[in-house]
Image (cartoon, rainbow, N blue to C red; front, side):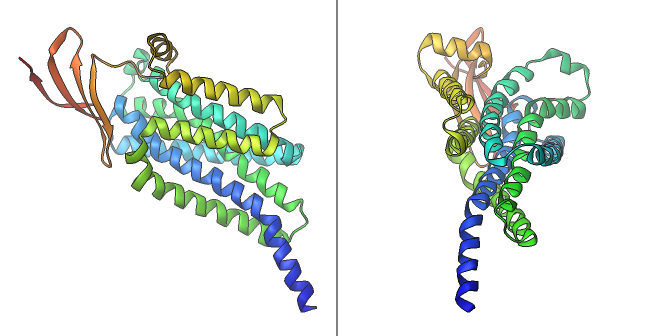
Length: 285
């Protein structure tokens, strides 16, 4: 009897490993995206209480909507068929955050709103969609785990626990390590890459998944290419932000984005920028 119970316990651990690992990774990516969101928009809107309030509120709203939609999807479709498509769409949505941020940051119609409203609208347009899509994954994974016939309470508890653990790990990894090491844009590319790898692991044979992988790879190559035509194309479609003047130096520190650049029409003038704010300027020669 004891041997049977022991075997059952080990089998349950094995059955829950894939769902728990999946929800851990998706929750990790959500929190990384949330931390990066504030740094990404800081180049256009600076960093303030309004910025963090908008980011936290919009991401939580997206997760809430995503959980609601994900529950409906889990009841209507087979989770094992739904997950690769969700991961593929999440990868493309992460790609779109870079494009949307660069385009929305230059929308003049947003200037008619007061500062808090402008920040909230910017964050909503850029980050509500990816947060919502990432939020759909957990309910679908929970349904997949329950279909294995494991105890309901423990299964749901494990899924929630591993999701929370992924969120904690993503928060500390992004805040203490990843942003300073990789920079915001590269982190978003990496999150998108993780999503597409998950999509391929769950459904490599699906045409939609393979097409999403090709689109993501093409966008990354275009954004990182040093060729003139590639840079011009990346600027035009928003994969890269159009520099104001000539960018001489930039870096992502633990505290803010910093850059040194010239001013268009004034090649001898240098500006030192932290996030959106110009902190000093000098004339050379």
